[in-house]
Image (cartoon, rainbow, N blue to C red; front, side, top):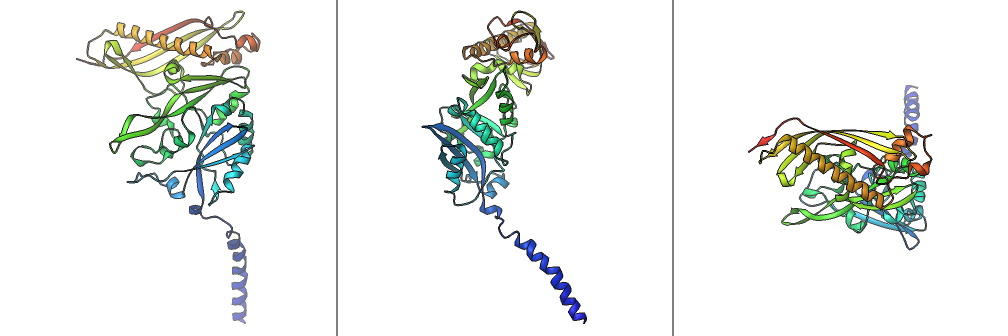
Length: 373
């Protein structure tokens, strides 16, 4: 009798486990999946082109550099819709594709100029995609070449600048990173602009194994406003944004003709809005700096004036370049729109000209003398 009860108990206990284990039979093993870490998107010849940068599981999980670079797999699909391009590559993939690790989007000018609505619609319908995914534009370089750039010391691309920019931008703060969420929030705004940093390949700075080493760096930025593409401004002409970057990190500044090396420690700015037929702005900027090197023993007052001249020159250059492409690159109009929305029409808010800046007050405080010769 006890033998009967023991058998009954074993069957009762084991039988439900068969259903639980059976439910796992269709689950893919992680090493059999292809992990997509970046997507590139373009539109040409009436067709969407999607580029997939992919790794195996070990490449995503591990970050230790090896003696040989881990292979980068770049796939390409095309279709009349973005989903059609995804379907095209999925049906030609030898392994299942997993999209939960996508960290970066590379977006072409052709998408930014006329096809962002379709991109945002696709993005909102795919539950694997995250709104905090980083977004970059690309211009002249082939997107497949951009996706094939390894990091230094054979590190995989996911440990390079476009995927984890915070550390890379520690001393290069002029451009804030942009996410898909940032783009969507600003795209439908009646004022202000969207800035999408652009990426390029450079071989001018590093060598690896005695050969020129390709790296990815910021080349400039695309600008859009009121759902229209404005244009592109190169990196050197955007240096005025340094002084208005809320993500500011410690920044180096060189006064070339004085051989003075500075460390900009803090930046604080306040913009006053002046009532007029069209809004005008008073900019108040406070800079705290320290001297890293001063071999010619230049006086503090002279250095302060030099810094003011540099800031004013950089600001005027960037502001003018924005006007050339009809873009409010500093988003001054957004401040007037937020704080005094009833004072002006949208057209007047967007009437940014060279006369919109009524005054620019710059105060520089140098807290120490630094190293002298």
